[in-house]
Image (cartoon, rainbow, N blue to C red; front, side, top):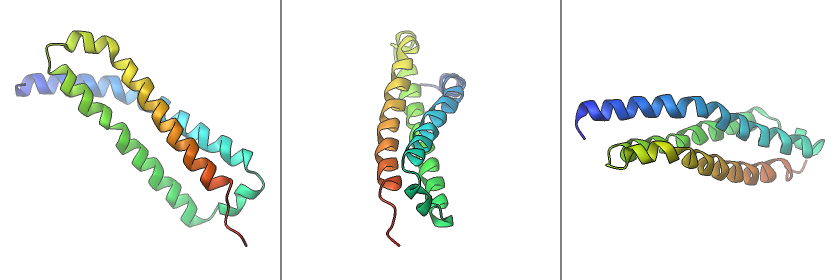
Length: 118
């Protein structure tokens, strides 16, 4: 892939994936809020500065993981199957959001249903 093709593929990937990052973060945040509310009043016990910083770290890591879609997308756009890929990359988005949602649910259950003992 020459530099102009790479630039076009990267630009196309950014245009496609960045608007979907909003949905990705919304889904993950909704899961965290649901499990926080479900764990009330016990889940309030974990609300410390360290815990909020830990949640921030997890959110950043989730967004770094989201960037894995760029690697797959740019690679696929560099192949002879580019046109077909552009029609199916929504599937990668669904799989990625679903996988992240399962991980977020798992972490949320552990974080909010097992607060530290006094």
